[in-house]
Amino acid sequence: MPQRHSKNNNDLAFFTYEEKRKLGYGTQKERLGKDSIKPFDACCLCLKPFIDPMSCQKGHVFCKECILECLLSQKKDIQRKLAARAAQQKQEKEEEEERLMLQKAKELDAFDQQNHGALPQYSDRNYSRDKNGFHGANSVKVTSYEEEALRTMKAFWLPSATPEASAKVEAPSTTTTCPEGKEKLKLKTLFPIHFTEDTSEQKKSKSLDTTYICPSCKVSLTNTMSLVALNTCGHVFCKKCADRFMAVDKVCLVCDKPCKEKNLVNLEKGGTGYAGHGDHLEARDFKHLGSGTGLGLVRPATKT
Image (tube, rainbow, N blue to C red):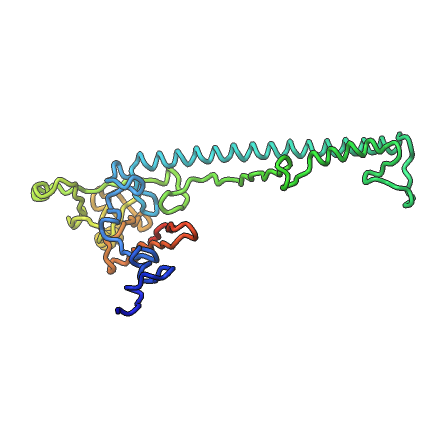
């Protein structure tokens, strides 16, 4: 008779650790490969090869149409939130004015009842008084106040008197943000960038895809290289050529346009998938058993 180990025991009323692992429950880890990483020549929004690329000051590259559409949708959303905020402030102001009018009307009514009522108001504690200070012939008025209080009572146990929680609209931010880096982004801070295509006959015969090279050293640009763009003219170079020539000569190597060190913008890249690249890319997925249903509840995967 085989021993009762967790790997071959199946007569228990609960799942063992080995059975849960075979069913896929627990924390599953997998390192992301090259196919899961965005290439350097892809738009950060549509994830396709960019068309008329534009970059922000932080080095995030977008298609011109994609980033303009994104900024336009953000402005429309800001206008919608501002309109909702203005409507809420107007409603609060009207409610405050109505509350002040009702309070003033109650004070006038109480003053009129006190001075022109059937019986004067006594301060003696032996006399029976209601909560509004009326007694005797004024008890009819007390009943009407009680009816109004019952009608406006906020009682969560009565369906007809359930209070409503007012949704507060916070003051929205009026600035547009970068969809990739979440920093403030304006249209005037974007600048077009220009990649140098490899037009050699050897590259044309090998592949139909567009290959970009550094205009200085003629090396093909890949995700393993750090790229630098000039925000004055938009030309893209590798990091080595930018540090060796442009940072010293203060001039663009393609158009001879003057530049400064602050005009060099490091372009963001997706990575290569290798651990030596410095990117800690690991996908984790946690799945556990649901209570009473037999279904598994899955938590979204996270990338670290």
